[in-house]
Length: 386
Image 1 (tube, rainbow, N blue to C red):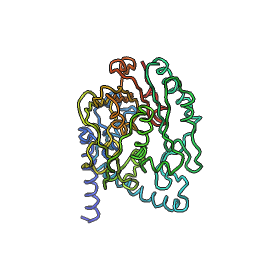
Image 2 (image 1 turned 180 degrees about the horizontal axis):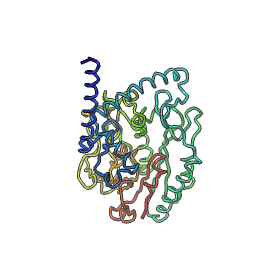
Image 3 (image 1 turned 90 degrees about the vertical axis):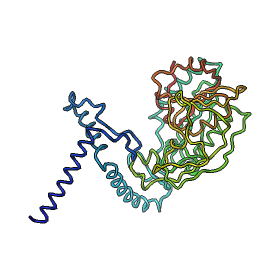
Image 4 (image 1 turned 180 degrees about the vertical axis):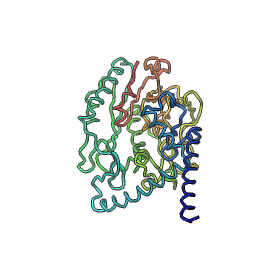
């Protein structure tokens, strides 16, 4: 038999074997996590195949399951992303060598400027109504609870400033001007230039790095407990492992665009932590950070988004505090809590119902801290509702 025909048959057998194995893996759904994209793998478990097979939405879901469960799918995606990112990086570097301070489009809504992956400034006219909705929700709660002290903190980031012109969005000032001022203090992390952004943020993630989170912690503490001195970092923890974030996940360039991990380490006073009712450790509390994972993510060190986290520092002469925020608050939760008695941190996105009045009374809370970035103030998922 011709060697070419033998080779063709062998290739067909390999391809057919992969497809059959992929079909078996798809049906069994063995893979639970897609580590490359930091998400749960699609499976057939929740798809009504027989009732809606001819439905295009069902067929699309089955394709997603097949793409996740097929053998070597992650390796193939990574190889494709790597080649794509290397070529893209070469092209971008040709441009950015001459224009380091100008946006160069990478993919989707993401741009690169001086080695930082960024979003462009949001047009305030497009988001004004969403921001006003959140302000009205806050004002309702504030006006109904004059006995409580409220602190509202806005975290500026890349979507709040045009790095080419340094023109700022109106968002922070708009929130401040329209908040009920009677029992509220307002503060913000200001980003007025690309240099500010570099001090406060990772190159590849949407979250603030240790410089930004420490600044935010100090700002909020000054409003919440002005008599308290902020904790001083003992040292900077470093790791040779790469930090990857939401922006690299979105564009599939984790092997090309990444950052080196750095974080402050603090000597925290003795305390107890309860995560959704169970006593556990939140985030990393050691003076070194080791992981078997290939990459490091923000949440691996600072802690994940949980429905409720309670930190008890056993300071009965101090206040109980409620922190209502988003993932940005994960990095400052333990620091802020060290200055109070009990601190309750809730992520309202995970609650089916959250009864503010009952919660505050039950836990003897006297101070409310609302802190987050643009997404926090735009999303109705963070609305505080009775």
